Length: 333
Image 1 (cartoon, rainbow, N blue to C red):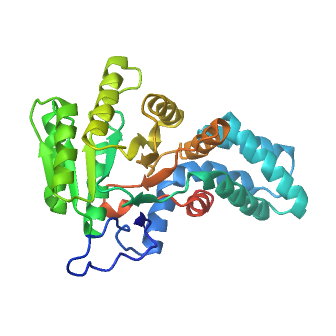
Image 2 (cartoon, rainbow, N blue to C red):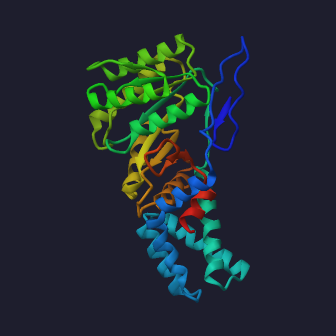
Image 3 (cartoon, rainbow, N blue to C red):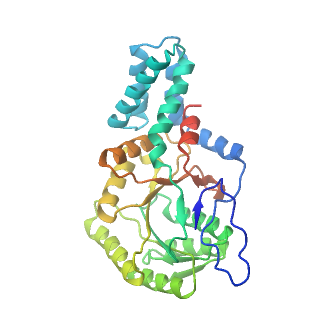
């Protein structure tokens, strides 16, 4: 069993007559390249926060400006208040007097608040590990599945895709392209019942000795009750195909949507019981603070839904595991 974590070495190739590797690390890449893209992606969010610290005084006005900047970044009122309270405590404790020092303390506080979201995606405890991926149209769901598939396949996993968005030809074709790029198998049936496709895919994955089965579902607005019920049906049918599955229920959310992303997390979690998130399109958004809101919501409800991956672009390497410290420092560079 391995964790999907980019700083972990890939498993060695399996020797003859030994089980296939059951997980993968993300493709190697230079941290400087990724950090550069992350910083640039978060520039709009971080710029408004960083300007607060251009003055020379640590006073009530600075904290008021910081509060406004965090709210504008969609950190939400609860997370913002928690951040400010802890920041003030640390400033008093360290007797910091320079804005640059307070900015550094804010990075520490933000990293600590985001830390509960940092958790690697573990693949291999079950074989196959079945992932059900959900989200609204336009969030980047199918593209994220494609990138994840490539990373897993390159790490030695045998992956099978289920094209359960059966009534949208473009979705099936897009997933088929990713399957071809990663050289993995796909189960796709035009116009078929989505639950039936996922059942067939999980059954095929078990029969073929696959390590991972990933089901791409149709985009759903959480307000579309009858369509959300269809997702529940797919989840139940997956469980009939393999006891205990799906092992991961992943929600892909668009980072540009800010507080609406948090609303989606709440709604999909209530319906399906989410196990993880993929936050896409953080490049160029002014709403990157929503991750703090998501973290705070999780702490308040006593069950954090981790952010497995974040995306800052269209390239394969632009989808990477979430790192709280890395994110906080990129945001407040």
